[in-house]
Amino acid sequence: MPLTLTDFDYVLPPELIAQAPLPQRSSSRLLVVKGDRRTDGHFVDLPQWLRAGDLLVMNDSRVLHARLLGRKESGGQVEILIERLLDHGVALAQVRASKSPQAGSRLRLEDALDVEVLGRDGEFYLLRFSGDVADLIDRHGRLPLPPYIERTAEAPDELRYQTVYAREKGSVAAPTAGLHFDQDLLTRLREMDVRIAYVTLHVGAGTFQPVRTSELAEHRMHTERFILPQATADAIEAARARGGRIVAVGTTSLRTLESAAIEGNLKVGADETALFVTPGFEFRVVDMLITNFHLPKSTLMMLVSAFAGMENIRAAYRHAIDSRYRFFSYGDAMLLHGSLPE
Image (cartoon, rainbow, N blue to C red):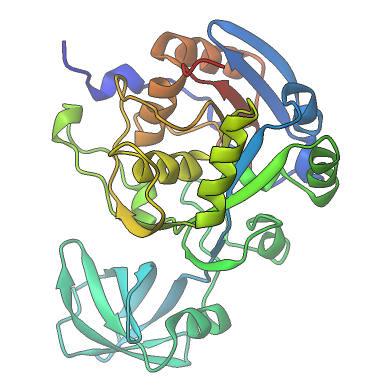
């Protein structure tokens, strides 16, 4: 039978949705899942699950101040959430307003920016800024916490909703699996000869959009930009040659690697992906996945179910709920073993 949304549903007590980060990044809990076996631990102990020669692949995208408030020329309020940056000062954005702004109209954002509405692109709007969009919104915009965090961003979020290795501006949501790493843990991993390489995938606001079709085959993923550097492709080849495992830090790193290898060998450079990973997908690159807990019925639930097995994930989530793990962006983590032979 074809898979449906209900196959990836579960009931989550609301109090398990983490509303703030823990005082220390690596003090979060870690649920290790290998087949039908589950082990409870803490993220600071990640090195015991890795070995010399393994390669961690991390997404170095940096979260923009992508939320902006303002007014239309008519005086009506608007809320903007940048989806992605395009060329020549243009951005694709979600616009919330009582009445849709018309092409050719202008918006005044944060009492600092005048933005022209160029028109629509599907559910999004094309907005023209008077300068470099990334710099302007980082200066005047607000950090966009996910919708399930029921508060506005505060000063500590400026650090804690970024990975310690974030450098390439472009995301509107953090690649949250990487939030558990601090510099001490990275140093310990390097000292035991676990290698680290980077990809860039800029997370769009579409990551929070629900799947609106009951039949998964009818769903279309939003498109995201990614870059696979030559150095990372070389690091993957070297890890394979020495018997090391490829460990994707987050679903964004996994989607980047598997998108780049969709035709066989890894394709280096910049590209776009709308890869929708569901059970039955053939993984070519990634052996292990570090990830947070994901929303019910989400495309990310489907991805982890494809990677670790549907029944294994169902059992792991039941265990996590019974054991009071913390869920979603500021929550705890999982280390999943995939089906590629080690």
